[in-house]
Amino acid sequence: MNLVELNDSLHDCQRCQLSTGRTQVVFGTGNPHASIMFVGEAPGFYEDREGEPFVGAAGKLLTELLRSIGLERSDIYIANVIKCRPPNNRDPLPDEIDTCKPFLLQQIKLIQPKLVCTLGNFATQTLLERKIGITKVRGQVFQLEHFVVFPLLHPAAALHQGNLRVPLKEDFQKLKAVLDEMSQPPILPNASSAPTLSDSQKSPKDTPADPPTQMSLF
Ligand code: URA
Image (tube, rainbow, N blue to C red; front, side, top):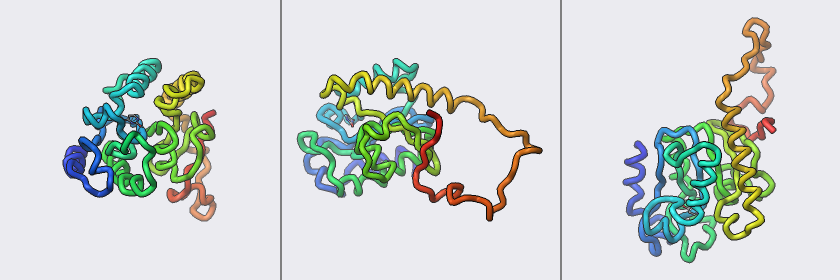
């Protein structure tokens, strides 16, 4: 299944109670070949009306922050954990996240981004599969099996709490540093002198089924 087919398959989704209150499913938008993907929480009023993620006030702020580090929205792909607007923008419920998560994972699998930027608690906890607060992990780099997760504060949080504006800008500056680092060619050890590990020497860290590990970029 490709991204368009996945989107079509969810058009009339009735898997959870959110289907009764939404105007439409908000699947995602942007460059389907992007190497950077952003994941938010759930559609709000304007996203539900227009069918696109981050088109309201938080979206405007997101666009500005992206521009501040040289990115346009057309460079990235944006989706949410939850594809339908919760009533009165309440927090998504655990069973709604469980129901919708497989579709986010399918989107990621189809887009194959190198870096997934999670905005706020829900996206971060969903992808790291850990109940950890965004303020603890923001601005850090987590290597998963197929991509890197970089958690940032949610722009909507900074709209509600003015004191989070500066930390949010700092998260984007750190993101720029991560992107610069990731775009450097890797420094490979001299092939003839590079030690190799036999399977028996490999630590459990080398196995793909590991929990997320923090990279030491900072
Ligand atoms: N907040 C989100 O998490 N997603 C949107 O699409 C809009 C606001």
